[in-house]
Length: 125
Image (cartoon, rainbow, N blue to C red):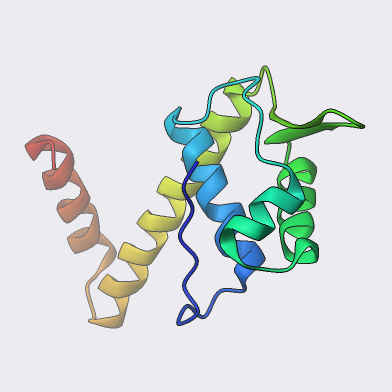
């Protein structure tokens, strides 16, 4: 598992870790039941505080993406197909919202935006 941390990013490091691991789970790069590096091992490989990686793992566990077994480690949560679908839907909705906001900012009407979305759907774009 390879993560890239950017000090230039406006996102806190724990959010960068969380986002990248979520993306790997959503894409199937990390499979159900796969073991994640220990908090300390990940912290060492990323050269960040163990507290930072612990926060990322805690957030991933709270969101249902990973499960932690005391004394054994953290694993990609099982049976989360519905969770993955919901997360993917949320991402699509967010992107669509950004497109609508951009269109409104330049003065496009609801009809014009609807036409644009319809054309994108018809073109397979």
